[in-house]
Length: 241
Image (cartoon, rainbow, N blue to C red):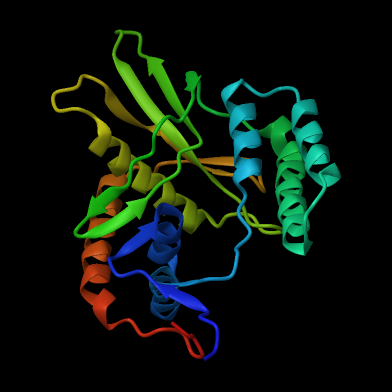
């Protein structure tokens, strides 16, 4: 019997990153994205966990000095690896950090207090579990002492800047996501300029667009469609479950 190549996710779920990609994609690409969410490869996948920690910490501490970023990247390159996968994992994370270190001098954020991300609970949209990973939170007081809050998500692809189309969907999702976390009757308000999709490759922080409410409504509708399609999504060719 051949080894299993994929595992099937029974209940609909998608990451906020993949959902933004989905919203900006063609119908054919959408089918591929959703199929990849339902049938996940069993092979180990390169993750950028250490890079996101380093870049997130840089952003939260106010930035300005890139030496800690360069040191973090070098530590990963010098780290002993148990095999080829770990070596690739460390090097990919180091590449991520090195790239952000190059663009960090031009990286800017809106004025406000920079906070740790805290917990990033999943959001259930029309039966689809959307997993989210915040990199930092933002908070500021207006001149009338009203609290405005925000947050940022990190995006990175080696050798390629994040497309504006995807970035706008990513930031618009944040608006609805963070509003869902606010307690009822809370006086804290969402501010579009503080909802950011940060491209670690280009150093651009994309704020939420003015039509974010409409976009989030479209995201909810897309999740309803994903929920309906989920049971009928076929595995990729050659997959062994």
